[in-house]
Image 1 (spheres, rainbow, N blue to C red):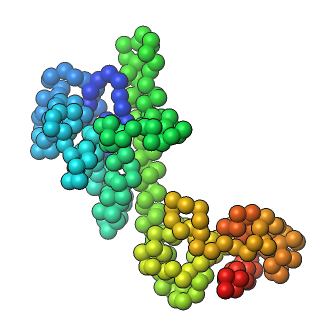
Image 2: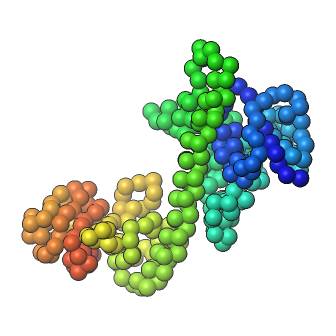
Image 3: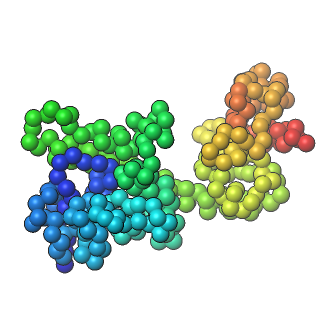
Length: 305
């Protein structure tokens, strides 16, 4: 049976059904997206997918609500929103439609669920409070998307629907950008793993361009690598390696005598012709050639001993 209608509730909207709509409209572009609470629309049939409304969760019947009791939960007991349910059942097909390589679909599905979907599920169900984001609470994705709802005294009878369909392409941009980032990280990891293998015991990792590298270093337990070098346009960069994505602390800092210097002053401090810049926080240095940046990297390593 061909899916002809995608059905969610009318009235005000939240991030979960909006983001569910992103996934489903990608998979069923010819289907009509309906916002209604009328029984004729929220009664399951083979040609409909119903989500965030209807009071039931039955994947075979293609109905994905989470407001009923008992509410659907993950294996670890954390609650699903409609987005989590749609992602569970349709996320892999969505990734395939987004040209994610087959070998990467499972890991990207899992990472997107953990990093993007689960926070939406928890916020929508009140399992975490927006206040956990502190002063950024009004800038979370759910808050920004729901801020697109019409104001309370908008008299238009189509205000809610109009705002929903205005918000939908904006939500789509966030989902697609996150997926593209995960795809890129998967591509980068294979490149970095190869470079790590070629590096051997050297504390300096050379990459063909700037790219995410921390996960590959952690995966291979390459704790001996202290710095990363790569070309950037007409220049080359020397970068420290963060201890994790949750901190700015590094495995090793660049020499203190370089901090904040540029051009002639930096050349004099490090003794390398072509040295151009060192960040005051000592996590980045720039030179005009590979030869110059490798000399700077070797000096930085020697100063650690």
